[in-house]
Structures are given as C-alpha cells and as structure tokens.
Image 1: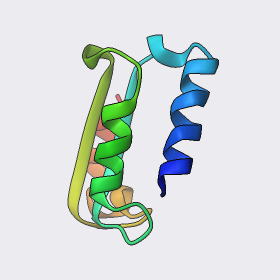
Image 2: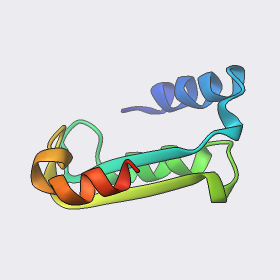
Image 3: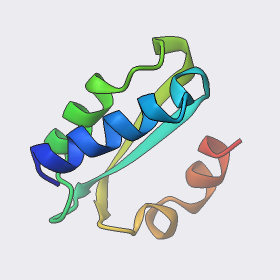
Length: 79
C-alpha cells in the first residue's frame, strides 16, 4: 500500500463525509502487502477524531488472516 493509495483512501473518507463515523483498522504483523508501518501511517492520517477510531494489530497474523489467527478477539473488536 503506497502513498498514492493512502491519499485515495483519506480523500474518499473526507469526500463521503465519513469523518464522523467509527472506524476500526486491523493490521497483521506478518502482512507482506500492507505492513504495519503502512497501516499506522494511514491510521494517523484519517480525518475522524481519536474517539471514533481504533487500530488493532495482530503480530502473528499474515495478510487477510487476522480472523483466523485470533477469531474470538476479532469478533470482539467488531462489536
């Protein structure tokens, strides 16, 4: 996930007025497509206030594997 994609995501959130909805960002420590540093950069740029956003990183998960690696915690974070 490069800077251009980060820009598009941030602008899409702003354009849709989504800066006032809750957002939960999930990251995987072993993700080779969206490394944790990239998720953290994107998260820091999101326009919603801190009380409306949460970031959760699962260190042992790979890309798309958070729900398999930590199914109970995953379900809890979606509540």
